[in-house]
Amino acid sequence: MSNGAVEIARALFTSGITHDVGWRLQRLEALRNMLTERTAEFTAALAEDLRKHPDEAWMTEIGFVCSEITHAVKNLRRWLAPERVPVPISLLPASAKVVRDPLGVVLVIAPWNYPVQLSLVPVLGALAGGNTVVLKPSELAPATSSALARWLPEYLGSAVQVVEGGVPETTELLKERFDHIFYTGNGQVGRIVMTAAAAHLTPVTLELGGKSPVYVDDSVDLRAAAQRIAWGKYLNAGQTCVAPDYILGTSAVLDELARILPKAIEALFRGNPKASADYGRIVNERHLNRLSRLLEEAELVTGGEHDAAERYLAPTVLRAKAQDAVMQEEIFGPLLPLVEVPDEAAAIDFINQRDKPLALYVFSENRQTKENFTEQTSSGALCFGVPAAHLLVPGLPFGGIGASGMGAYHGEHSLDTFTHRKSVLDKPLKPDTMKLIYPPFNGLKHQVMTRVIAPSG
Image (cartoon, rainbow, N blue to C red; front, side):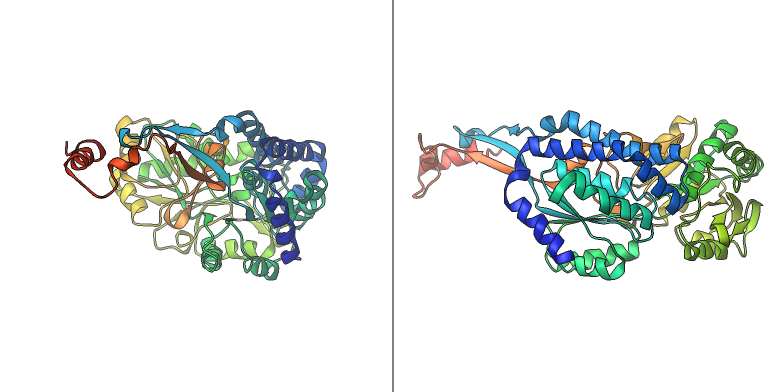
């Protein structure tokens, strides 16, 4: 099946139709129509896979993608306009420009935690760039995967080929030649994807993850900060690649947060997360067991309750030290460790001693503190005063650095990922000013080369 999907996608791209901007805009409109006309089906699938509330499903998945489509449709012709660049005097008369070429056939390997958004935002970027797509949705979100496989062909025809299945199907796909591979997931599989891509020298975008830290100081309204951190952490039951992973702060700040965070959780989920329709579930038993093991030696502040039958794990806050198990891996669940540091400088050192995070969140009203984190840390994104919300700004590139990923997308940055910026130079044969640099060389040509082509200063 995977070979057939690639062949169909390749044949459509080779036909040349995808270069037409009108064709691209039609595909984007069709994708938006699919989401708006089939909202109920996708909402039901997300509820079945992750028990997402319909409003959360709209905000973080369906509506999120629609917003990206609207932004792309509005700006696509401008993004694709040739970019004129100046020509040095030594080459005149001539003109030069940069044009965006489609890459070809793009493979998108999507994860399970936001199975609509993280499938379709790369897909729409690839289509906007004039490519065709082979999409491999996650088998761990089977209802959403099935909905994508059902409706994408109906609305988009052969422009997007959906290949369902698990590891064997993904492994077979990676043997094929693509023109770009876009993978969202963990670093272990990211290395496998990159190794497979190397066989064909295929460029890759890796959207990975890691531990996204939060630093909080005593200059902020801790109650307001706690509310925002709790929202970002427990969204989708913590199964978000940019969720706050742990909080760094002084002893006094953490003591106050330990008092306030349980109240923030109560406010979000009406005092009982298990009974709340607003709180999601862990994707499967394996991940629930992994998270439960991280709690075995934890010093609980609040939460910790779990129910295997419901795949439920309560929003949890705990005290932790750097050497604890919960600090050795990306949590990807509703556990929020509080880690004490003596001061801001120690927090920066703590972050810099570890892998570069996908996102870093700082809660401080101190201007110098903001400058210090901006200048002295490296992360995919840096947000002051709010977690995760940078994804809602289409003009900001979304991507990691180092172990948290490579490459970026969203808005025009998706065009940067899914097109090649091709250099085009046009110099007429007459007048032939090039003869001034042809051999044989003489005194006049020496002066032209030293004074015009590469003047000494």
